[in-house]
Length: 466
Image (cartoon, rainbow, N blue to C red; front, side):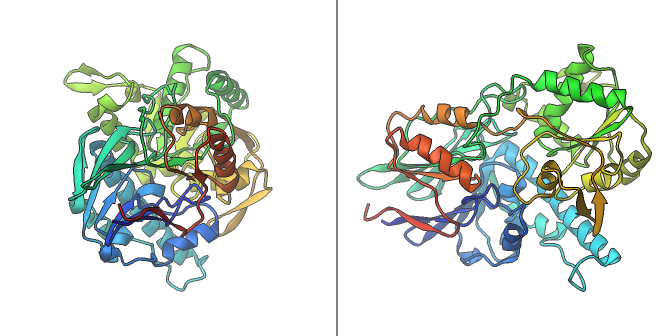
């Protein structure tokens, strides 16, 4: 039996996670994400995979962020008909995320066509809502730590990764007549002291290990989050401005709501309205209630309803386009949380289009901004950015808060790796920009481990003749 691994994404970049595991002639895809950020990366989404989609037996998902699931509709459209295996919460989140992604792509294609800023005569979305619906009948979900058979000689088991709802460290066990081999994919690892999520579970053995490295070259302490947010928001209040926070609709938005709620409860900031402008917010809130085992938010029953911090009188969900448009005329002080987290698309673009030019307003970046993304360009101080084909001057205040990322930092990555009692045969550093991956690789090599930072489309033989 020969086992190979091909890196179809998240190799020296933080997006497009796709790992092709080939066991003799059987093909298993771990994650199936979209590339985001730099144009040269995004163009890969439109290229055909270097393998026939119909030849893939199974897709296994670590979690439901778009850079891990967003290529699924295209894969199914191109002929994939196997099973998609994930946790229960990932299945629920996936439906929300993919439907929203399809809707946004269709809206952006229509907007580009109407306003003529695309180089294509008729811009098309990468996939449609109809394509997305073809994905869901293929999904087979399981609870954490339940062994699921993939092939006669291959099984998968999920462990809580602490990153977002349903996120999983994924352990594949390959069985031969003589031995067992474990291949572990960390997925995106969460934090050890997160306010909402439990810490990632410890695994102790792996023959082959893939570990993410988003923050592989730096620490990202949580200690100052409350005081930093307090200062930034009080400055916004003093200017009677509006603060725009680009934030991922799952995980980051809920964490921000938690902090804003706590700051108001403790009278550290004045009570002010917080508008959550994301069509996903209500659905995701219900998922937090349904999958309460997976996080720390407490809910109570009141008149037959589940009540949580999301039901605070200060939190307003903009569940219609009309409510979203009304925010253009909003006077401060107020906070608008809107997706996407890297300002690559979604409703936040409309808010940035209107607010970037206002000196009294503030844009707060509350998470990692990928190289080449619109968010990174604003964060890096570019005097203008293109939105809807127009150069928009950046005159508002630009702030960044650290510590809110749902990714483990360098210290936490090393803490998780220290749980392994023996060094894996091979450890691959993935899901990080080149510098982050290489710095983490050097740290791990100090442990005496055999470490590889793979390149895009590189193939590595894991086992031969077992």
